Image 1 (cartoon, rainbow, N blue to C red):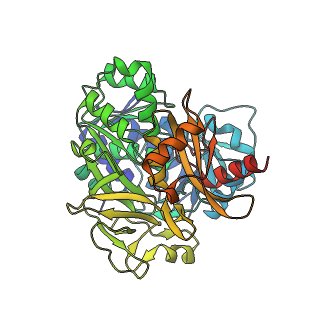
Image 2 (cartoon, helix red, strand yellow):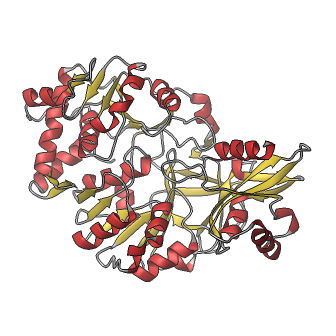
Length: 502
């Protein structure tokens, strides 16, 4: 069993009292100092009557106080509900109510959401400098000063979190997790207490929070960026000798395409972890040439947790076909057909996994939870195939399988083919009815200068059979994406439909 987060922090404060835990701008907190602040916040929250029965919404910017709040809430037994503050108000309120939030903690950076959260709960707390203009809130900093840093009991401490999915295919769902697989990630991916880790992904999304907490759980040092900037990230890595970082695929591409990439050395890096999207072959080769075999690519979901990992030389050896590696340490993976039978090697099946770190279910939604069960395995509808050496290839999602004239087409296959064109910057494929009501394949493309629809048609004609070639192309300035870079295909379909009608 993994340690509760606050217990791990307490142990690290004793193991490494003067080791830097967090660096942010010019500020630095050692482990003993960080734990003392967490203790003060735990005492202040308990004095306010908060405890194990509370679900507390967090609208977390990339700021150290976000992590202090997270450790404190789990330390007193409350369940944090981290919500992406960049969502529109309707989704934000939907998640907060779906999770039965009883209170909310905001920071000055998310003060603009005060009115929105007032409509959800009357127990509003602010962590940070008091604002005389804000009314109807309780300021925690003065309460923390009075509470003192005496260490409270951690009898109710845990790792549980009520998070939310990205909502790329519908309304966000609220999975309840009790384990983060920190030990498994350390073993499989190579994180350690000796790391100096750069945290640049927003803490309001699962992968950003997970890998920041991972480093603090192990006792490493974290350099937290307030927001991602490719040039600044490369400067910090080289100047401060960062050894480990987790970056989303679109972040890697922005770094690769920035002018500063030419002078970037990355020689201090032992690990670049990436996931939550496709890491295209050109990115893999560029970083391998620049930093050596330090890039690692993993597949996971909010519900199932980590599934597979590809690392070292395998990242470029298996650069084509969206290979995501072998099953993760401690995770059993099966590929099942619609009759729940394992498919043979080389054939496509639904990726189903089980481990002790899988989620407990969608909060308040047992029927939806049951839809993810395959016996004692879980799935979110991802499709994949195994090769003879046990490597898993991500093929797409059940919802992304497009049927044209009864023939199934994997959107990812068409997208990968189009991304191989030098004039394509971004692409996503969806199915939409044409003016006659017949479903056809659309390719939404963000082209580079000079790329035309005729170029794309020729490219597809040379590489795809007739039934897999897009019937319609839409050249766009940008694709609708989540904060993690995933295409929101429902919104894309609406955009393409409006364009077709106009």
